[in-house]
Image (cartoon, rainbow, N blue to C red; front, side, top):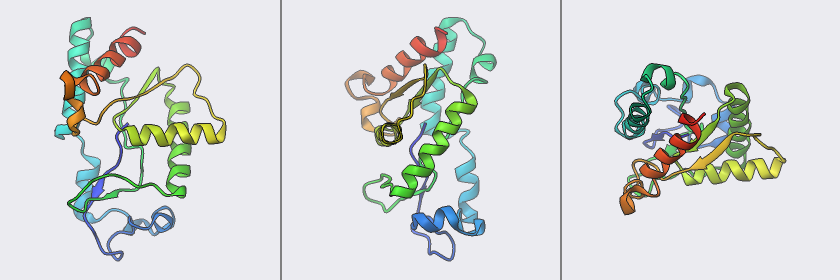
Length: 180
């Protein structure tokens, strides 16, 4: 699970992403600006995700498992469905009530549909919001392991030899993906 896509400050006539209520109820032509459509739908060769996929490939190689088979079991999407503003300063999504409800319902739907062994959030914020949503609604996710690691674009991904990010991610894969 990633966190969010990031948009520049588009006028509302182009995208309503800055207004949570409008984002979830607006005319779909004003959700994603035309020049952003290929960026938000094309994760292939995106450096951040390549760091994650490279670890997945290495874990599979070490276990002697063919990549195509196990990678077909992997899925990715951003937890927050509404993009965050990239204002050139500090990035981060500041969810509103409607965001938390919509994404919580969506995430539980994904878990119910895919029935994964493991869900790894590449965002502490997204992980925290999801766990708050589950507590608030009294929801459980059965035997699914829900975990969080530092985001690959964060300095914490490599800090202290990767114990908060890349090594932690690898350990979750080995213990809860490969082992099953």
